[in-house]
Length: 312
Image (spheres, one colour):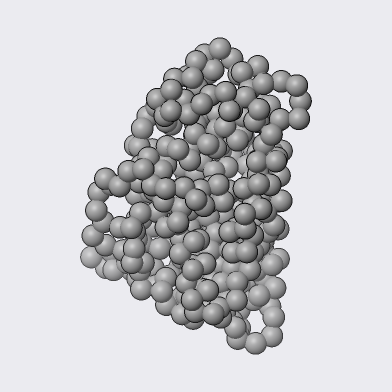
């Protein structure tokens, strides 16, 4: 489970840019999500780090006052990918190009008979022509299964936190930027070895067979601002079971982002920034939050709801 979920965090929004929500019968929320929001500061400016869920529902809005205040205080907004790259028609095209097989094999030849049978059943249930999968790498097929399942559960990429703040920054005239390039994100997926890619499909099918339960559990944890619970669900097991892939997906990318965030903090002046990235990248000892704390910056979680809960 953690392997497939964590990979999905990297690029799901790009593939889902034109997707439509197929079901909207999720339970109605009555309160704003508790934010995964940290303020990292030095002597003259600050960077707010906000953990995103890349697909959300209308009931996940409005956001908390803490998040709105962080956006208001920031002079610019940063994302994993810049809005220009994230929303470019070239992004899904580049991903498709990377996903197309260049060997002489087919997807069926990559999979054992039991997995192929499960894939056939899933494709039939969802009216997906299975023949179209045969020319693609297994990682792309696994990602497609996840996309279909999450949209069936009423989660919409157009409502994801990244998209929300891209629109909000544009409306406010705030400069935006990205921490990495689209080619770097695609390379993470396309660099999976054969075993990892097969596992990707198997885990996607297993979660599809379980229905909405697991996705809803993660979404609920994000809404509660449960940093520890999300860390254990999304990263800790993956680090234990797939250490090489975890290093490439999470640690290496976090290490590449930290100098760029430090550059914002260390520059002269008092301009602040809001950085919106997948929640996985902020959590645990390998997360950006702790890496910046270890470099001597002042770090505090911004969570009025957490303080109110502790006071009760």
